[in-house]
Length: 221
View 1 (spheres, rainbow, N blue to C red):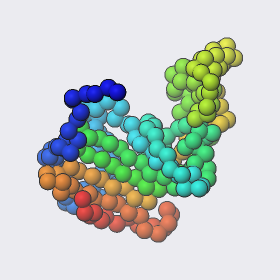
View 2 (view 1 turned 45 degrees about the horizontal axis):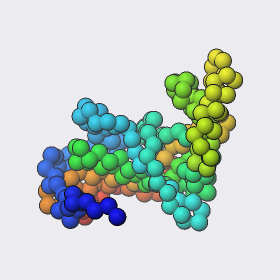
View 3 (view 1 turned 90 degrees about the vertical axis):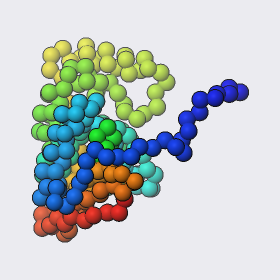
View 4 (view 1 turned 135 degrees about the vertical axis):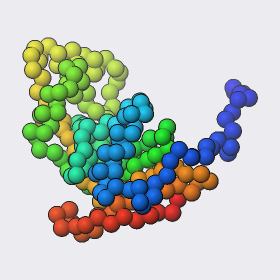
């Protein structure tokens, strides 16, 4: 048995957050404007992978799973990412489209938490984004049976080489690959504050997507 003397002191690992505040007066009129401003702050701060977000899903039987993906677009309608539809998250969302997103911007003491429903984006939108990807990533979409068990790495490396030989010019998007747009029902903006009295302001949609309104609620930290 290996004995170590530098075990982290987990009970005393904490920071007091004092960088900013988030009051109702400081909050934008809508979640999209607020997210746009905060995302600009993240990019300006030089955080690595500023568009990385955690996507939580649950299968039809309730089994949860979580992973990190990259945000590839957002507007008033929601947040968009792309994946293999046969992956674990793709299969989860086919059975249960309700999901949650988390943007963990710890370096600037902020988080954004989204809850909503995922819908597939139109094929034209997938094709347009796929055309902008680097060739290596395009070939990877063909080569990897994402989330499937494989015997060793050579399986995907050989498949990548085969795809490279197949597509001598333009690489088209695989039919099993495409985008999801998470249409939000709630968007929570979390700002760290001293003594764990964090600011949590949440936009919540009432009614339907087409006929609903948004209300702002303060949540206890």
